[in-house]
Amino acid sequence: MSLEECIRKMTSSVANRLSLWDRGRLSPGCWADVLILNPEIVIDHSTFDDTHQLSTGIRDVFVNGTRVLENGNHTSATPGVFVKGPAHRHHSLPPSLTPPVIPRTPTQ
Image (cartoon, rainbow, N blue to C red; front, side):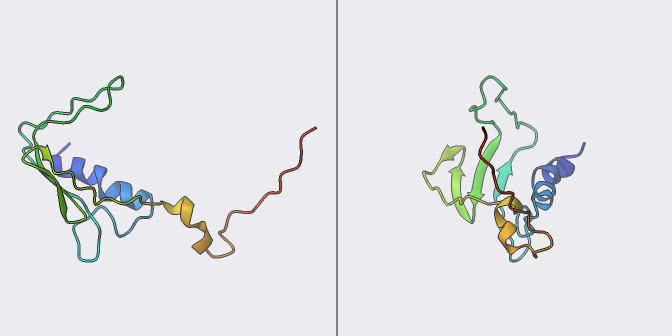
């Protein structure tokens, strides 16, 4: 798989699947994080047992236009926001698509 295809699968493909049309792509009016890396030396060190290991080969990261990683060091900036997917937006769906409210009955 090409580097471009890997990046697409981690960005716009995921955003599209979650109906987040303004995320995951570098286009006017869209929100996206930018990662500057050296593809020759990127290594993911996390495992299923130890998930909090940083990757190497990643130089800079920008979140919402703010640098959060500079030359491999965290800048202490925290510009990210919690993104809610379509399950949290059902109130904006037309009535025909709104999930029904099923009353709960007490169990005996």
